[in-house]
Length: 375
Ligand code: UD1
Ligand code: UDP
Image 1 (cartoon, helix red, strand yellow):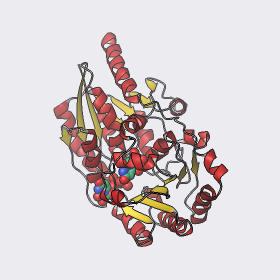
Image 2 (cartoon, rainbow, N blue to C red; image 1 turned 120 degrees about the vertical axis):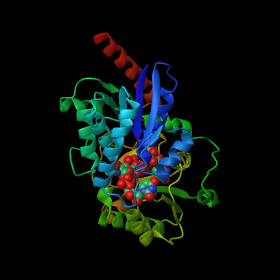
Image 3 (cartoon, rainbow, N blue to C red; image 1 turned 180 degrees about the vertical axis):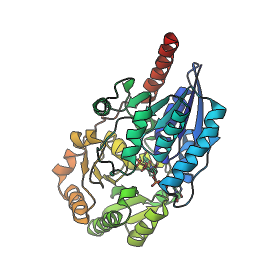
């Protein structure tokens, strides 16, 4: 049996790791354990409750307005005890958060192999996204197994002379998406239940990135307000991240506009179902750039770059930057020019077929067998 410890701590990691954890549990050759760092709390618990994943360890590190340093030091210190007690054969981390990098580092200090899920995404700008770009580069250096969502991600790793054990698996977010989106879905969230979407164009907005805090997020909010005022048949749904720095800006600019609904973070089933019924998604999130294309909903990316060029190339996602006039102009184009809108609505799925978790589990078992043969 191979003992696999999956460690994650934020909402997006949980959404993308829970389908994998559920898959690992199906295999008799794998003993699957889960450790939460608790870098997020409410937003993390919301996800594991929906998937029914029960953690074996919880470092519970989240503090209000935490800094990169406090996340790093508390996860590093607390992971040592977990690794000593659990003694995993393999630690799985996901993506690019501080949890991912620090857990990989903690495992490296114990010489425990690391598997990196969602490996090989790059912008090649170490300050954007910050600190995520560096987190994933460093995690990639440490990792022994690299589960790359796309061929393009694999090529990025190869350019860095990482050549062993790269497996193109698709992204597990598509595995999650396939289980959550349903016809005739009834929302759980009380605010969503009250909204009459009849005859409305639903615009789903999320924005939270560290490099957008301050002026860029203010610009984003002013553009959203202008869209709401110009297009009264639009209903803008903005589930606001719990980061107090995000909430202060968003509520100060967008509160009390009739057709803008500022709501608390919604659970992943509500999120995926509202997304699949939306006219447009406007976001700085990574995950939404992967999810919306699979249901044919155009995405305007509220950033200056993306590490996910595949859907941009396919034409369903457009990077519009963080200036008020650029954001407004691009949204206006989609509201007023049907041809431009239709060009962006073709459903495309460069990020996977919903079977990434199965491939990752198979590769882990294969890797274990090849190590046994070598010993
Ligand atoms: C983190 C990740 C980012 C990821 C994002 C997903 C890092 C450095 N950043 O950024 O890559 O895109 O998660 O959302 O790893 N808070 C709560 N409750 C929660 C979650 C957050 O109150 O459930 C508040 C806390 O005050 C916390 C703050 O939000 O201090 C910021 O959380 P943090 O994890 O540091 O940063 P994120 O911006 O969420
Ligand atoms: N999400 C959610 N509820 C929300 C907002 C987002 O379930 O209120 C989901 C979204 O569908 C995606 C993930 O959270 O799967 C993205 O997380 P986030 O934007 O926090 O992080 P990022 O993707 O930018 O790292």
